[in-house]
Image (cartoon, rainbow, N blue to C red; front, side):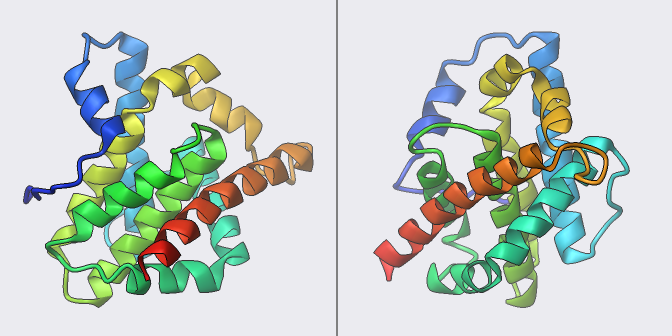
Length: 197
């Protein structure tokens, strides 16, 4: 896996990396799950590798699909508008992630980041940057793992699953609340993209 140097450092990631204390077992599981979900969404979007059968991964894919259905044009054009190259992909990813979480953390923004990571992996695959696909899995996993304290306070990934079960088996209001929250994250992505154009 290649390492990218960047002049623009994510304040969030810099703080979370430098202030690391030994993680509790719950925090380690949350972090591990973040990486597994990142791998799953990238495999799902690129068709490379096997997708997970876990409830959390299925819920994440379903929410990501809904979000993508609602914002097809924006997500399709986003990577092109950011003028990403193999050398700039990590820096652009961090800029987008920081923008998504600039005003705080919620499940919808986490879904938006996974969705963006999947679209970015598709973009890289289609544009001759196949080596970046595994890197994207790592970047998304690392960034979301950095949110493990917030995720743990919410009740972990089990809380995500309870909130966003399949809408056919549960009250649809939580489902659509998740889509609305994720849309806020996509709005943050759009703001960043069009600031740079």
